[in-house]
Length: 288
Image (cartoon, rainbow, N blue to C red):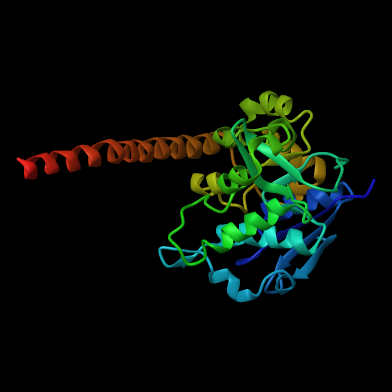
């Protein structure tokens, strides 16, 4: 069986120890890993091959998907991976994905995983370039260039719409820890739960967007005794950190993040309910 070849994209500041640990986890199990970029990357892990991103898309493509006037790297990387599938046989992997064991799945054809029972995910992905659905996907993304897009419009939501949730392998293989439980891998008290969830998994997704909102400083490692610390120990990634978060500090950060998310969701619900009510009241008043 052909060995899987993985690839990702990086743009911006240097890699943090967390990204290095994730990329290095694939090389630890003998997989080839490439990192595409438009500029040289400092501190690239040994075994990770630097590749020129212009072989996939021109640099100007970075500006194709602005949100409120700011180019969205998230939407760009969705587009980048879809086009990459038409030019290489590489499997896309986000830089917040950890490989937990030898990747012995068939590397040919579509390789898609579910993140929930109703959604497939783009964090680890391979789409067969011979299938018309990939070209439909690219056409739909290209139609969004320069339009008012929202988070996720070019990602899992679109992928699920085009391919269907049944195209995805079970959540337990690539996304064993649900995104709402992202914090559990950072806390020692959830070690056994995370270990059980990941017992048959190939990868662990760290859900970087949520981790960033939590306020994680990526120069500091996960608490000793946490499942993520254990995984880093297995691959030697703990050597990338000079210090580690105390579990109590990590718990406080998570509590603050959860409280903020809950508050934000409350505001969103209020707007969803309140604005239509006010609009209706005004309309009735004017009509009277």
